[in-house]
Image (cartoon, rainbow, N blue to C red):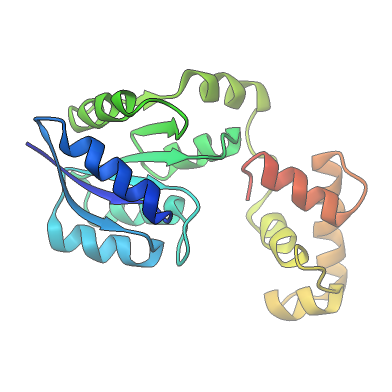
Length: 201
């Protein structure tokens, strides 16, 4: 029996997936969470074989949780699922140690098959996402450029961003300028949207 923890912030979706997976003879959903901040503790408590992680959750992102699971529970396989088929997310998920990456719009049979595959040590990647990731290329933004763009998302001033990140205003301007150039946009909000769309943040 493959023991699975489901981490999905939408309660109805999480319950539906649990019910459907319960119909599989070799899969048992042993725990569920809608909060990214609680998944690691739940997994440590329950020792599942596979954790199915949504990328965008309250508390912590699935990408952060995947990296923690790799460090704390290397034998536990991580399968990422997402509504947002952004190529940058695929690269970041694999870098975080995920063995699988699926879009949520596929049939539940694909999810069950992916759970079995990652449990067996295989990698499972949505073919469409793989093609998009290759076409998009690697994330061009540095960690600091991403930090600055995230802080700029709510319309914060240069001074406010500098204060949050303990940088000088001129350094913040430089990071924003570089990020705008790398995303091929005209201003910081457009740069943020482009980076978000591509899964680079």
